[in-house]
Image 1 (cartoon, helix red, strand yellow):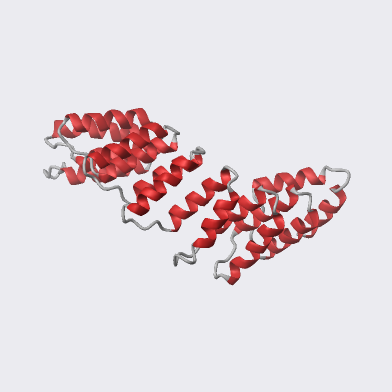
Image 2: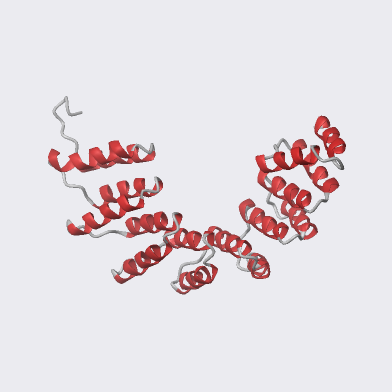
Length: 281
């Protein structure tokens, strides 16, 4: 392009930046970004948002924040995408106080958080055990006029299960259909895992069996979660039964289930039985 005497514009540079960032080539992305001004172009909000996103995906949050501050010093106003990206990056590495400050800051600037902004912060809060703050954020979202979708509900149900609040998680899960929201396979898997975690394998199996009736086919994760639940509860025969069913469906045991089977094969009480089962698969 340059050899033909055509100078790239900022749109072209942004496309190149995005390509480098998608490949995780942050050194090349930064070099290109720094050279834009020297080539007669000025980085815009999209340029900054792209490279900030690249750094966030690489978990290089301090460098992302440096660019964010540079952006505002240069008179550029971050948009919802910029803020959502940074909030997601901060949440991912557990810097939740900073993520929440950014959330407040964007609202103070008159920017309206979108469904992605809420899902990224909600996910961070839930994954790091801040369930009360997550529930508060969920209510803020509802009151803002945005309708939470299955992604938001799944994140919250997972967060509740992680901290042992199965009763609340179950209530939220059961309320989905009333709200006209259909659980997807990820939602079912989260709920099944949460129920198994509390040692309620029979209840988990009922939900597992109900999936297909509700038009949601169990996937490899569904089977592995259910097998893990039974094996951990020493219900070997039920675990093996589902293992057979899983293999017949064309799915494979994950690393966790495989490790549990190896342990059982090494056991004096179950070794011979499990070896015979595995040989038949």
